[in-house]
Length: 513
Image 1: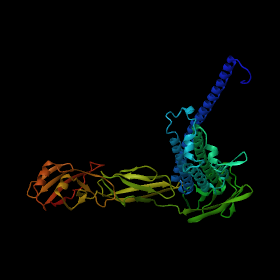
Image 2: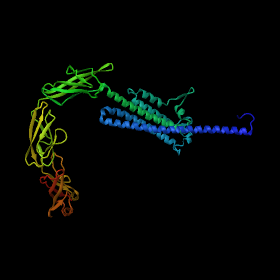
Image 3: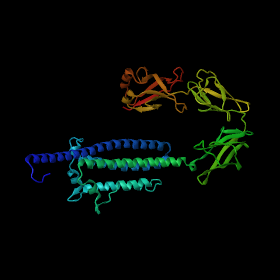
Image 4: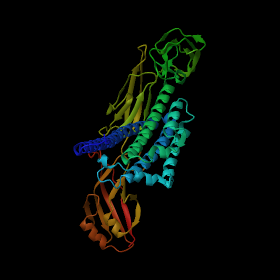
């Protein structure tokens, strides 16, 4: 095209053709740079999604540890180590990218990231790998070796270990029969956008590796849990105790019942049990004599080519038929006026029990009652109990409880009772209260008023639980060492203002200044 004799017009045409080819090549180069940039964006989005998935897995694993620490704590410990390694290396790469793009004003103008000098100057010096480049290689090797050391001995992780060793390898690369250093082969002379995309790809490899490891850990745990060798035989009786002469009724189930599971053989107390259902063995035999009875045996089934045996080891109690009820007051054998007295009433072996007494009502589950004897004037109250045995026979009993008033409250100042020493300023701001020492019920007392007496001055009647202006003025006229009296303390139950408490004992305050 450029040889031979050519006219000026033909030379101009040839020159324009060369310029066109050069422009076409330049446009293709920009398209490639843009493609790298768009790839980097997609990788960054994918990394964010993978990071969210990994964080969700770790959060779920943390919850499992709180529920079953013995099972999941070792797994969580290894997962945390992998996460720390991954986060450290990922943060290092992110900082590296930030440093490389520090001078780029518009991070999406990929056509302008066509130079290689920024990274070349960072990783290489005089044809050799710089300290910064060696740090990058050390980080890569450190991550690889750290992951392998954590999961290298785990069964089922062999493929992941191979992938980690391959993806994070920094061994020299064979090119045209010669070995080329890995860092030079992968990063030297490349456009900046291509190198940044390679760093983002390494971040993707980190997050993908962590995700694969976490998934494999969970999969391995699930396989371990569903293995039949980890099932435990559980004896489930139809009720907690049996009467002499009754048949024991119940069933033996596995910790994880599988409706498709069929036992090959079941032996209980030396005898073969024929009655079985999907995942369960139905038991029905004489309960035996009064006392504790054992259930021993084994469940046999095939798993692969071997026979797996699960031992049965449990016990149950045989008790005589009851002829009296067991009644206990949760707060001694006394009920108090003015409060709700919790009661537990039951008859062993009988689920449906009826109890009657003045002020008695059911509260919550079976056997739980509350008793209010505030309006009861008698000094004793009788609780009658009845219930029916499985055979229809009625069992009844009764018990007498003493009815007492709430003990006399004790007045307090600043939470202290009796004779108290305190400063004048402290007394002015302290609250007068009342308490019930050694009373088993947790009830609040509210002070509505009291009398205040300074020696040599008139008694002042105060409303509420703190000194008012009149009593404070009288207090200021008291001398050091004088004793101030707080008496006729009026108090109410916070939960029952209609109940009249006994007279509250006074408080004596010696002024220290």
